Length: 519
Image (cartoon, rainbow, N blue to C red; front, side, top):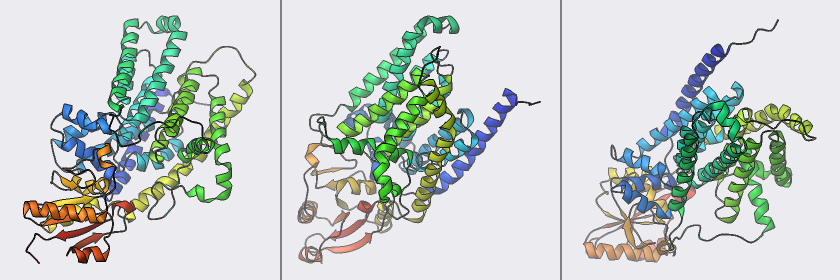
């Protein structure tokens, strides 16, 4: 006689497992975060929040960012308590830990799958250690999955979560649009049945969908670029077979994110060095989509979310901005989300000729998922160990040198501005002079005024001009080394250099321009 585990016991065990998994995750994450030096993309969000005088001013400053501002609004509140960007790392890690708890506590996967996911590349590193707006979106997707089984009983909460989700990133916005559309199709097709089974007021359904629509609309209004935008300008609309193949291959990059075990690991793909893998990568991407689509065939709402979410993200990568692995990771997040809610999706009655193939795909799901998540675990271990071993960015160390040597009160000229802005975030200074855009500032304004290149000679001349006007020494910070003849020609003094970071463009060289009349 087989004795099953009671739901109460199982629920209690899942709760203990979720807490235990989260505790281990926090220990590993905290140790890694303490050794992670944030780079420009992380600091850009902090500077926008820190140096905006109000929420309205923040949203004005965000117009060139290409992302909505929920993450930045959170940072705005944090920056009113402290000027240290370290608080952002604490907040971000707590967001990631909450995601892991919900996943370990409520998701329908095996305990092995939960462990592998928690310590995989995206969960442990990309959406945990690297402080960006994406982790907040992953958390809200996780909350949606928790609510999904009783979605129509909690439809106001579902609408609120999807409203917020659309405000985290452009990638999460695509997911929010996809899920909202799938829910609308599901509700319209089963309206009478839903109202009869749940006894919910239809007004709650209307309000929920209104929140989703309002979230999508307000998010779109935020990310529409100004006419003078200088980043990811225009759309790529004509057919290019090579570009299309490259974009489709991002699926396998997202499903098998194993970086090379080298200093400059970030953004690399270890499997890409194997000729055999390169040959099958396109077909493997297509196979994954077909295999999972067949598995979802009897669950229309799950199938619709997966297909539209995947296609929507691929269209973004093809037509607007190809992005990096952190962006492609949302393809995997959509896959996990749909696999989570799959059992809670209603299926049509009757049978079809495809049911046999669908059943085969369902039986193969667990071993295939285990295989995929093992690669994620390997990627997470490589990323965490390499970040612990090497300096990610020398922005923090450079800022500490400036403060230790008493240079923080000097006028500072920096180029390349996007790299040097990292240093601003780690200092109490409100601005450096950026020759590339001919302005004093902290965060980067991605407009057309800054897209012109500047030579080393021009940077030096700008520094000398500022020094003459202010009758003061000027500090030049570059993310490259000056030629020795330029140093001698302009009587510069090399103060320090910081090289060998994981992000190679965030190695810095410091030069002093003495005010006129001094040696």
